[in-house]
Image (cartoon, rainbow, N blue to C red; front, side, top):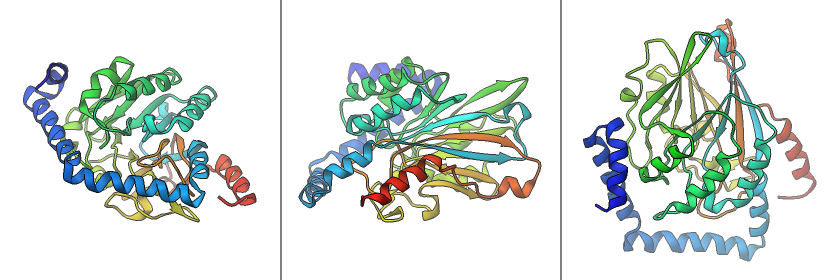
Length: 339
């Protein structure tokens, strides 16, 4: 173990426990040793090169890159029958799947948009980085975005992220939740923001530990990089789950139909707003891109979730779709010229 890893372990041991911190880092090291091994690399990198080459030869590559830079701001209004009254109108800025090294255009657009919108807190549901190995360029890119975000920021790790990034992310003011919870208090009432470690690749999530300090029946929001744990989340009593990971498919058929989601879950949960039992959910299509820096029929997004009180149970449990003012305008423009 090198000196840098020893520093990470020392910084995380107090909050995770020395044994869990050691195991968490070891799981990650083993996982990426497999991914970056010669056998896996022989399968991965040619496929990436092939996809990019196909788009370039077809003449669609530059169009896909322009699509990937056109970041949309969506609004999602949610009604709850048990939301504490002081939080009526509480607004959460939801950012996911930055992949900052691969998504310069979208990151620039995000910084510009963040200057013009209002919200109470910001949450980042994982995949800060796009590559593997060294992550200094990731931290530098995230730091530029953090400068444009006002107020508290909470985050969770994604399957592309490394736990080694946590000290650097927290140093810039992003409270990383590693199977942990954080109370938010307003006028004597509390809601809890809960974050779990990556449940897709590392399987390091622990919902039971994350909610262990939360009073029963308290209003709680779960941040999970992948929405695949939606059943566990609903049964644990969460009223809202915010996720990313799927990119909405990133490269979709007309109508936004994803070719692939890389997640085991109902396709209706692959992007946007959804419901499962008493829990609202939202899967962001992400702000950045993965593998190749293009998007088709699936524009990148950041989302403002507005929490509302409701005493009408039927209203509280119906599915709410995001307000599409900006999306409709984008759609009208798209219809004028083929994507």
